[in-house]
Length: 386
Ligand code: FES
Ligand SMILES: [Fe+2]
Image 1 (cartoon, protein in one colour):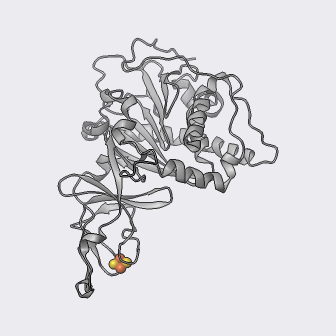
Image 2 (image 1 turned 180 degrees about the horizontal axis):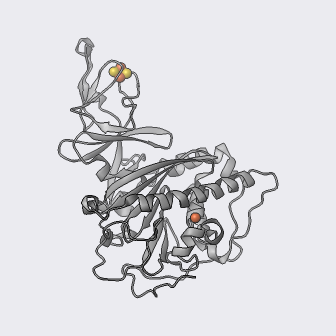
Image 3 (image 1 turned 120 degrees about the horizontal axis):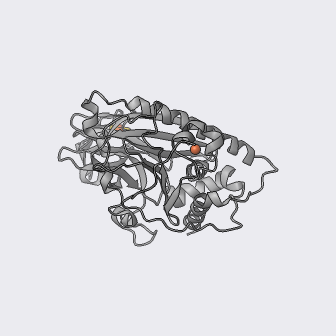
């Protein structure tokens, strides 16, 4: 095993005792294959929680937009001329047409429906509706786009489809939701980072298997030989062990980076000073974000469940904004490495999905190295049943 720098200090990190519950088992089969459970998840989790849809740098200029899918709904996320970010259902108020078909782009002045050219401002107001003045009682102010709640956390854009004005339904503001993580990631400069690459993966596995797989390194020696050489699989220490945010750190071998070449590929992403910063932090943010914080880049997985047996995964790599101009910037070194590791992961997730669908599958016992997947399941149950 390669030499490992002892952990000197990891600021913002306080190790807690993992709450391993002996006897904890994987979820029953229906949670991975049943359309009814999947419909319940969309209604109770993906339509009520804060869902990651992107990063503010992906719509940097006024008129920049992207379209995202949340809980089976198509949403438009757009930046207005004052720099504010808005979210709307991608549904025209006239006869319901999809407004935008592209995945992303820039709008010059407004959102115009391709069907009969009703036109909406970036704040959702209907500002043009040809020939509607002749219609008695028609009032443009009553036909704004249907908004969705939008919030920013550390530069990442989240939406929430719950009715924020309703007293019931358990809606909590984005700020309240992220209170447990306040200040935790400030040294990584997440709001300022810029993306270098996105890869989309269409994975034939239930979305929960992706979380459970991300949350343990029990599988690393066999599945990820390259990763295990640079970051020993048994070096993990968790500091978030219960609730919607779970994870902790792993060590990186001395003088190494998690890249194909094993060398650092960009300017440090965070303010680490002269510190010998040899940690990678892995956190799952319920219910659709995986946040991996490296010294020289940040990788984010965004999950979009498509069916009980299929998940679309968008993986983005972010770097320090000044890294892009430098000679020593080699983002592909990290991207290639994780594209390899991602595919290794998706493959075992797909194998799990196939085996779980068998009539012989029974929940199996979690090991002591799987305390985080077990904690994830507990929180999932709590959300689904509440
Ligand atoms: S459906 Fe959009 S303008 Fe008619
Ligand atoms: Fe893995």
